[in-house]
Length: 225
Length: 225
Image (cartoon, rainbow over all chains, first blue to last red):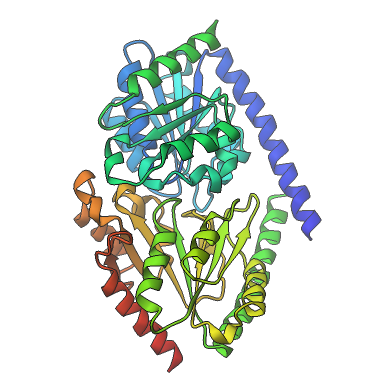
C-alpha cells in the first residue's frame, strides 16, 4: 500500500510537470511573466501583490490568480484595486496545481486576454509545505515570511526557503514589537539559499518595496530579452 | 486514477481512525489528557504551550510531542523549560498522523512513563489545512490564530476553525500595530463555530492566559471524573 501511494503520487506529480511545461510555453508565447507567491496564512501575500502592482502598473499590466481553500475575499480586493483577478477555491486542497492554473489562465484569456497582460501573480494557498512540490509554470517563486512569525521558520520549513527565487521579509515596520533575530535568520538562509536575493519590506507602509520592485522589473525585462 | 486516489486516501484515513481510537483508549487508561495544538507557522504554538505549562505545572505534569518538517529547535526549547519532549520530523509531510503519535507516546512511556504524565500537548505542523483530517486521539483540538495574520483567516480557512474545540487569538499585546477587526472576526466565528470558547491571549506577555488555563483545567478535571 505504501508503494502504491508513492507511485500514484509520482504519477500526479509527473502529470503536473507536463501541465507546468505547457503553461510555461503558453506564458512565454504571450510574453507573460508569472510570479508564484508563497507564504504562511497572513504573512501578507495579498498586500505585497497590491503594493507591487502599485509600483509596476505604469509599466506593466498585472493580473492575479487567487488560490484559497474557501471564499473570494482576496479576488474581490484585487478587483477593487483594478486588477483582473480569477479566484480558485481548492476545497480542502492545501496547494494549487497546474490544472487549476490552466483553467484560471483560460478565464483571464477569455476576459482581458493574455496579450494584454504582462505579469500574473499567483497567490498560492497559505502553506509552507505542500506548494513546493507543484510547479505552476511560473518564472519566479517568491517566499514571504513576516516578522511576527519568528526568525526560526527557515530552520523548521527549509524546503520552501530553498525553493524560492527571492525571499521577502514582510512587516518590518512592526519589528520593534517582536523578538526577531535578523542575524540568526540570515545565517540560516546563507546556508539554505545563498543565491536568492533578500528584501526587507513593509507592504502596507512601503519600506523596501522600491528595491524589490526594481529587482522584479529587471527579471521581467530579462525574461523578455 | 481519480477513483484509485480517493479509495487509497479513504483507506489511509480509516487506518488513522483505528490508530486514533487505540490512542484514545491508551490515553484514557493512563488518565492522560491530550491537546492537539493547531495554527499557521509562527502563530505561537510553542510559546502558548510553554505559558500554559507555567500555569498548570503545580497541578499537572505536562509533556510535549513536537511535530515539524525539520529541526528539533522546539523540542530543545521544551526540554530547557523542564518539559519531557519528543520530536517528530515529518520530512515533507504537512501534518501529524496517528502512527507518528503512537511512536512518540512509546518514547514518552519509555522515558518518564505515561502514568507520570497528566497532560500531553501535541504541537502539530504549522498548517491550517491538512491537520484537520487526522484525528490523533486527542481530547481537545485548539486553534491559535495570531493578530498579525489578520481577521479574515476564518473566512479563508473555515475547516480548521469549525473543527477546533477552543479558539485562541494570540499576540493581542501587539494589536494596536495591526488592523485587526475583532467584530468581523467574531461574526464569522459566530457562524462557523458558535460553541467553542474564545480566548484573547498574549502567550509571551501573559494577557488572558489565566482564563484560558482555568478553562483548560476544568476540561482536564471533567475528563477524569
